[in-house]
Image 1 (cartoon, rainbow, N blue to C red):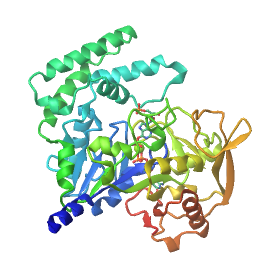
Image 2: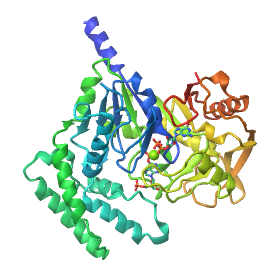
Image 3: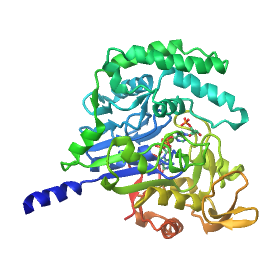
Image 4: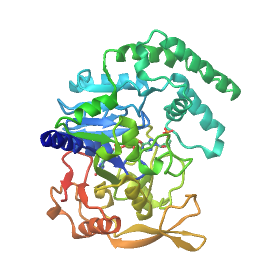
Length: 434
Ligand code: GDP
Ligand code: IMO
Ligand code: MG
């Protein structure tokens, strides 16, 4: 009896680690997941869709993933697209085919949750129609159909990818499409989606050759073994549908809570939460950004950091680190370990600023307010910068003292240790700081 009890306790201790963005996306999640993958057996995406662009660089290869988890370049690792993800079959097919030039053949190690929802061609058209309706209040969506696909999921009109095998799939598709056509007619929005539709159905046929799972059962079974799982976030905490700068957000829960609903695992299964943030801030698309720099400092960050969107190519807005927002994200996600990226981009600034409070109507606040609007004035402190090129540094002892102090400052303010520092886009440009 005692033995049975012990076994049970042991199984309950098996957990999932999480890695997610603490800012407005593009923190370097793809790069770091790729670096951490050797420690894991399974990498799983739990939310978002092809609005994500996760860049991996190694052996002179630079590759951007949108739907496929960032563990795919490591042989024998399983990559799961969870039920919380929305899938555009056309984009997923293109992504799979683009891997063949590296001899990566994901049909054996890419598992897709049957419950993941499909992005239909009309979802993309609706995305464009809604954005044009918003005029100067545009969200700056990637226009991949993310919002409309999640809307239909909640409205109970969506199509799950597991349904592609059912006989009445086309019929169900047409019912939802008719609904979309009515909305589009109401908007007088006439952009044609027919060409994309035929590509879409071809891609559906192509995907039928892949492995479909019930992710909640899959993870329940895996958690009875010794296999290690890493959940990979998309976007960032400040784009979360509930806690981001609404309405300038994406349509999913990008925070740790999203792992539970997006893979089908209980909250008690969450172990380490790696929170990743840049040494400064960027944002692509519209919405408030208190520390944004519309001057040559911001332009230097954009140039040095090559801050152009991985999915859309749009220039990213750049600004100093926002400690108010960072603490908010650390708390929301229960971050246990921090990863700071793009520290190399700050080399050469005499001083580095960090926003410690927000000034609104001349009053200082140290928390993210209900309305995060453009009236917020950041209250900065200044820290000494460093001059040397750090992109070839291999360990903590190679780093300039000012950077070590910057990391200690972030640790002290957030109460979370900085576990890794990234000093360049390549896999090898990663320093374990603990
Ligand atoms: P993700 O969406 O969080 O995966 O991030 P993206 O791939 O969209 O954007 C991060 C960009 O910064 C990519 O071009 C990466 O190759 C690059 N990158 C990642 N880490 C570093 C770093 O430490 N230094 C520099 N200079 N570039 C980095
Ligand atoms: P990764 O995973 C940065 C932004 C868009 C827009 C808003 C809503 O690469 O970090 P959506 O397409 O979801 O309707 O867009 O969210 N956005 C991202 N910004 N990185 C991303 O993903 C993003 N995914 C969406 O620019 O402002
Ligand atoms: Mg990105």
